[in-house]
Length: 239
Image 1: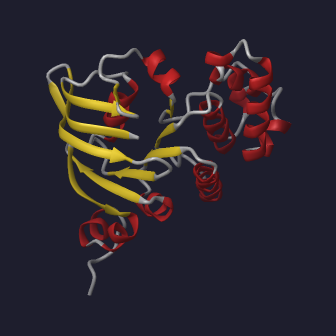
Image 2 (image 1 turned 45 degrees about the horizontal axis):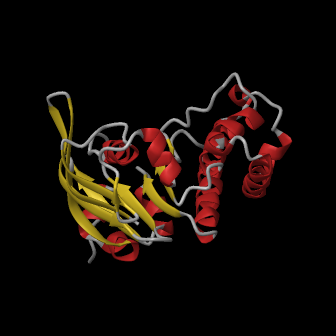
């Protein structure tokens, strides 16, 4: 579904990605783990068009994304939940969801049906639909950010640090929701510092260090890898 081939990216003169190659297959959950500054968010920014690649190719469903505008990329079926949620705090839950469905704003029946799907994932949002987003708890805001991204019915959902700042119980609920979304048919590329949680729900994973992929494998094998265990899980190597 998604393939990055030898991608390089930079912020002005500071190089952030060095020949990055990865792929996400249809109906997979693929996680990208690494330390702060490794290039995880930069990778998502390249996919969404927020940061143009200076070299390499990005393909989605066999077609190039490299020169497309962000709005065109959304219409192709890619949606992103950014780090820090970034809900519209002075707007209601319902209004935030409607913004997520902006590309189909004239199809009221479609929007109503999609909103009901979102409420089935996150029942609390139905109860809070007339409440200002800024008054929600951190966990509820994360649910809203996920719901807003799903309002366009994306083929590929990009998630940037969905567990950040959440209490442990909300982290579990968030990852349960991500699994439900994946089981319903949405492909997911997950960037996450909580490597254990990410690898627990993922099919495959990539380890990113200073803008380079240093390891890739099934999630199950990565959980047993000495580098991953020592660096990202806080465990010793296998005995």
